[in-house]
Structure formats: structure tokens, C-alpha cells
Image (cartoon, rainbow, N blue to C red):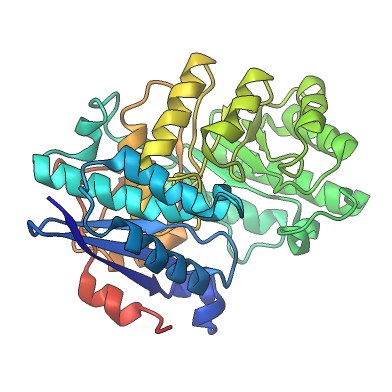
Length: 387
């Protein structure tokens, strides 16, 4: 079997992009065709708003290196794509590119073998795959509104775990680090929001906190410890910007709350120092940003040797990311939960021929070959942004 054609589709994600379709945080799908008629679909990562056109060009460039190759050689082809940008930095942009091909090649391999990807990866530890819900609080600004949303969007839909960033004062700084501090009023508002959610969901419900890398060392320690003492949070995520590994060690040693990191780390090489230095209680690699099915499986295996649970980040990825992540997480022993966003389910399923099912706080995969879910190509084309 040989790869004969590769086509990228940059699809407008209206739930995130708004009116400016070309500059929003859109989804980039890759269709890989073969000379035997087996087709695979993958998804590339787009970390920065507006980076879609650059990633489309990168897909076209990488495609020249893959036409004529055997799609079964997933490992070798992953390295071939990953090393294309070695002199500019392979991690991040390069891994997000490699993921699109990687997922598509696993899809092809599964279809050719007549097996789901999870069977090719060694079979299941669990079915279904449990989730935690993120982005369930749109439009909320007061503790009372967060409490109402928690009842409606979490408990009433059968969830047992959620994530939120309650420190609304820091919203303008999600993509940048300033002085790492928060005002006393902004800090108290965050505590009040989490306390209101805890009162509604009860003591056994798992509340995870995303700090978005906003804080300096003393601020992160204080916030994490206060939230753990007051509301028994399940983890404090990305307390510092991702570059600060030595600083993270300080935070880790002085907080009672479990620490989770990894959304902005890429490949097994970035995670090695985390495991070797005991910097996190949980890791959350993004399945697409870090390199796809092949790479997140390797990171999970590394984490297993250190008895660290893995909980992949997937928001704001498209439908193939959560499906690919679920395949991998159904096969590993050291799994905690998989992220998802209730608000993205309609947009995801609108692009699929058969919708995926989320029920009772878990995603249910089917037993069809490959990913088990096919993109509706007509809808993908209709939603594509012309470049």
C-alpha cells in the first residue's frame, strides 16, 4: 500500500472563531488517501489563533515527503515529519503537524486490519472512557451564576468531575505572563466561585482548577493551598508558565494541592524532566499538540513507570482529537480522566457521519475499524476556509 494523496481542510469552528473565521481557533483536518482505496483522517493542532494558514502550508510541504510511502510505517514517518523543522524547533508546531499524519495513518492501519485502534495498541483496560467537563460555565460572572451552571451543566448531565479557572481577573492574561500576581479582591472572588460550585456538587465531586500559568511562585503556592483547604480541589493545573521547571519544584514542595502540568509540553523529551524530578502529580499532554496517538501513548508509558496518572488535554480540539485520545486512554493502566467541553459536542458531531456518545460522564467508543468514526467530507468541505 502506498500514500497517493494528502489533502488539508481548515474548518471554521464557529463556537470559538466568531465572525472572523480565518483568524479564529479553527480545526485542521488531514485526509490521507492510498492506492488501495483505504482513506485515513487526522487532525493537526493549531496552538495560536491565526496559525491555521501556516499549518496548512506546512501540511502541503510535509505531504511532498510522504507521497509514495507505505502508510503502515507510522513510526518512521512520524520521525520524518517531526524532523522537517529541526532547525526551527520541532516541538510545538512540528509535533502538531506530525499529529495530523500520525492519527490518519493509525486510522488507515486499523481499517486495513479490520480492527479499532485501541486493539492495535494492545486492547482495552476500560470501556467507556471517563471524562471531566471543561468550559461548562459560559456567561457566568458571579458565584451564584457558577452554582446554577454547575447544577445544569454538570450534575444534571451526569458528570462527576469538572475543571474551571475561577480567577476572572486574570482572563486578559491567558496567553501572556505579567507580574504573576492577583489583587486581593480578584483572589477572593475566585475562592467564592469555587466554594459556590462545591456547595452545589457536593463533597465527592472532583473539582479541578486551571491556573493557566498566570502566577509567580508565592502566589501559586497561596492560591493552591487556600483552594485545597477551603474547597478540597483535585488539582491545581499549570501554576506557573511552562518554562519554569525549577520554580515548579518550589511550588510542588510547598503545596498541599496535587499539581498537574503538561498542556504546553511537547513529546516524551519534555516530559522526561517532569518525571525524573517529581514535578507533578498528574500530567496532561495534549494528544494532538504533542504529536498524536504514537507520542501520547509513549508519554503514558513513561508516566506509568513513575506511577503518575495521565489525563490528556483536548480542548479546544476538534472531533478527531477527543476520539483519538479516547482510543489511547482506553488502553493504558495509569489513566485518570479525559478532558472534554460540553459546548463543543454539537460542533464536533455535526462534522461526523455518526456522532460520538457522551453519557454519564464518559465517552463511548464503538467497535468499528480505525478511529471508528468518519468525518462527513461534504460538511468538512462546506465549512472549510479557502486559502
